[in-house]
Image: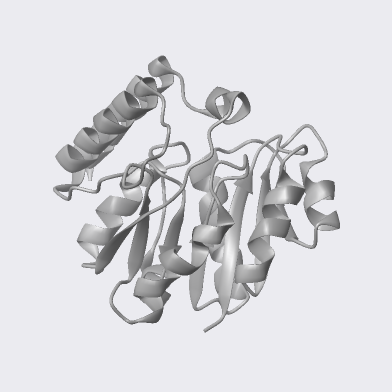
Amino acid sequence: MKILAVIPAYNEATRIAEVVNQAKPYVDSVIVVDDGSSDDTAAQARKAGAIVVEHVENCGPGAATMTGIQAARALGAQALITLDADGQHDPKDIPSLLSPVQAGKADIVFANRFGQRNRIPMIRRVFNGIGNFVTFAATGRWVRDSQCGFKVFGARALKDVDLRMSGFEFCTEIVRESVQHRWRIAEVPIKVIYSEYTLAKGQSFAHGVKTALKILMRSFLR
């Protein structure tokens, strides 16, 4: 099974090399999608040995993820891992996330930051609860950590997925795709590494509300 990792990145020059180097032992290749960064994210990723695809301008994490998926397909990937560029996900969790796909038990695997004793700030727990509720309202499927960017796509999901939402709402769109295509899902607890840096990179409350409204509007229009 050819396994690739996709890391969407925007202005992550100080973190991207470490994330790439930590992910490389678990996959055949790492693809970094530089989403219009104004720093040297792309150069640092290349130095670390990643395949780099660049957006001319910032398009959003959903668009960057889809670009990475398309690149992985072109390279013949049979399984795909997506993870964040800021270092909040621990690549040591990749084998446990891959396990349900490799065993033929799941088409997509969702990481669950709330399934272990992680020290997660209350505001993040609240945001996640809102995100899960909105996702359930829009898709009819309950996922314990629907907004986490750490996922594994098996061969079927990798072939079918077609993301059209460019912003953070793409996480809910993936859940909707899993319902529409009847993918088998699995959820695996992971470690999460929060710091002042990773917390600052998250969505603000206002942006989260805007994202939720976009999700609901799009779900009713489709």
